[in-house]
Length: 160
Image (cartoon, rainbow, N blue to C red; front, side):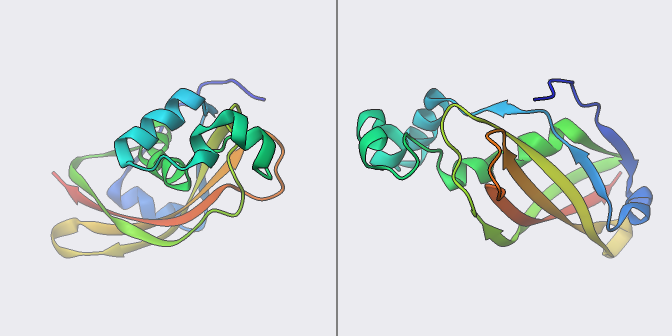
């Protein structure tokens, strides 16, 4: 596993259009610990045993142990994006929503995850603002054949 720190890609709003269709960045690996999963369960009120009961999950789960919530994985996209991309000259950025979210594979507690971001589209809005769609693909360090999360993420950027 590569432990190099990622330097953020710095782009302006006009620069974005030159990156359509390209993978912009791959994040550092982030450990998924039982403590992180417990904190997410506490925050969201989702105490399902497959996430929290290590003994039962070791016996009954097809994964051989506890797994992270799919929504925990999804919630980390903001943290991952901040690590790898800096849009310069912004007044604000707004999370506009998600399209086509899928969780094809489980995230086993004790593994690491990272995200890949590809710029799918840039649409001009009013006063120089844009609506950008990224494909976020999150993968695990355990060599899983499928990614653990794939989502189209819509962000609106507003210039200074």
